[in-house]
Image (cartoon, rainbow, N blue to C red):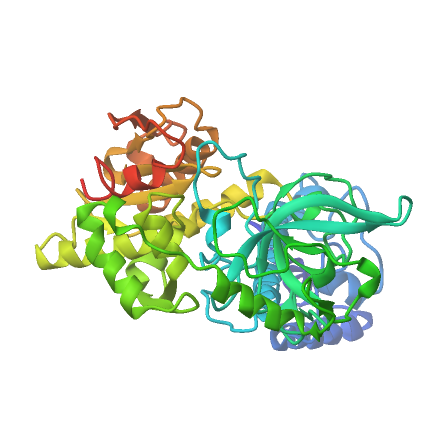
Length: 505
């Protein structure tokens, strides 16, 4: 059948047959044989009948008339008979394009996964939180730009630094950015799949000073300092200076060596003996260490400080497994001595500290029989990611959140810490009430990205669960500001997210 009309090749054969079942006109024998042969081939998939070039037209070897349809009534137009399936063809084309897009997405995810040395992440491109500086929150600091860099697969010792380039015009060093350097970088370590090479280290750029300055070692998608903000890049070791203004252990030579020295060894200030720069780094770590002032530590923090002081070396980390119920997949995080030191001394805290605390609260809920009521969602799942457009990045983060909300039972609450740009806030989601409670220690009204993210995720949830039928799909999710203690300083936001009507509420 073609639409609501019977196939015309069958009608044509019937018209050529007499009452005795024989052909009326022997001249039609060849055409009738071709029709039966083409029908057999079509059923086997070896013959294609498309539009006006169907079985009858090919058997008769005559093109179809433009104003009428052979063996149909005069009221049937070619556009009606042959183009009935135009809409379905368009649907098929759309479905085909969607399949191709999904295949391309899968290919891109695979390529992104292959960029990591240790492929220990979810198939989705979910940013990790091993690099503390990119996810720390300080309300007085410059807001972080959208984008999360490729993270180290294993946490290593790192330090704030200043990044220079060699100015060939003026013949000296030029400070272009502030960032963080990974001190134990090896030539075989990779950045975006490319080995660092001799004389180079892994750095992340946090605050650009001269945005349009060229990178000393550009990548395929980053050629200027502005392009590499919150990303990992390789940098010549001779052009990296540890930031001595920060009261932390300095493990790098405080001066900036001559860029012409390249991969040569550095000379010590008190002698002419040349030593390897990594040896000097290790000596610097021994000379200046982070020391706890137990007299000024909060009494509740002292056991943790005593443990770190007595049982941890400053280059050690504590491995804490984070279950799939928080991350979406099983993954360990590593707390360094520096993380604990900063936490105890009420400095900026990393997402790792918040993740570990969430793991503790989840275990507490399980013990108290409340595991089904509260779900803790990793902040890395909704942290800004680097994409071509802001909407595309928000789309990916909304999909990550939707994967947690998809099978949400009624009365379950989802607690989602969010770093909106060096400032921690907390969202508590009740999908069945289409409600998000918003806790901000600064009590600021600006929450555009968070609002759009919640609306996008919960709109998708309403559609997938059928709630969009009961409610209007375009109805915006209600986001309610909730009372939250006002922070007085510049770094307390992370601690308010942990307590004081925060995660432990």
